[in-house]
Image 1 (cartoon, rainbow, N blue to C red):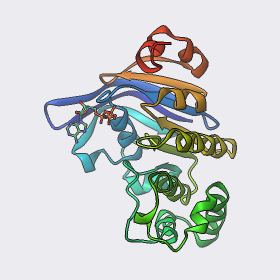
Image 2: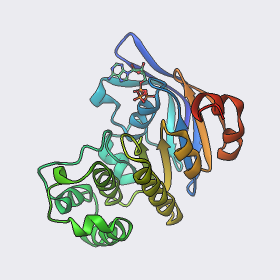
Image 3: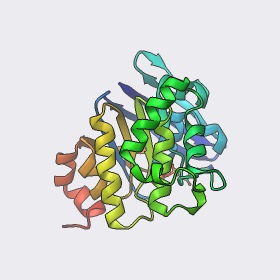
Amino acid sequence: MLSVRDLHVRYGRSVAALHGVDLAVPDDGVLAVLGSNGAGKSTLLRAISGTLRLHRGLITGGEIRFGDRRIDRLDPAAIVRRGVVGAPEGRQVFTRMTVEENLRAGGITRSSAERATARRRVHELFPVLRARAHQRGGLLSGGEQQMLAIGRALMSAPRVLLLDEPSLGLAPRVVEQIARIIREIHAQGTAVVLVEQNAVMALGVADHAVVLEVGRVALSGSSEELSRSEDVRHLYLGGH
Ligand code: ATP
């Protein structure tokens, strides 16, 4: 179980980005985090993955636990070793490195046997990454780069995978493909935190969801409940 309790985050002195966020992701769960621009979704993922400092952010209160251990004071590499792994924001594949080299870079915290198992899993989930193994990352399409970003995260054998808007900028058909793959990753036993502006996609994949509004959890419940909620329908599902 990954749990966030009363989390407060600031950027510098003036920006309070999260004001007391609570949530939990069971080991076999997929949690969607919805919310409009600036609600604090990326901040939440940065806090969990330990990368806030890279953005001049700081946890000023609360705690994050994975299992029975606190992880909110660990550095990003230690958090990855514990099994909590993010696909980088904005995909950020290494454009000059080949697909294979990108994947290898994702597995550096694991033994070579673990990497081999993880690579097999990645190639089964994303056959295109095997087909393009020796092509440069920068030559892949947007959807393929997203797959590579997720594949790279899977190379460190996560127990919890953190995804920041994997549907961003992708055609509907590709979004559906990514959604299917996230369901498959979950079915194989990896918990997922799915940050999305695309509420239709996220609620279709997740079992639970929270809606962040200006740094607070405004709504939470099962995906079914939230799909029926008037507020969510109005704000995020086109009001139908
Ligand atoms: P988006 O979908 O637009 O990325 P978000 O829900 O992910 O939105 P965050 O990026 O987490 O929202 O931003 C939350 C708040 O923190 C916003 O007010 C934003 O302006 C502020 N913020 C984010 N990153 C920084 C930063 N590096 N320095 C200062 N303020 C920041």
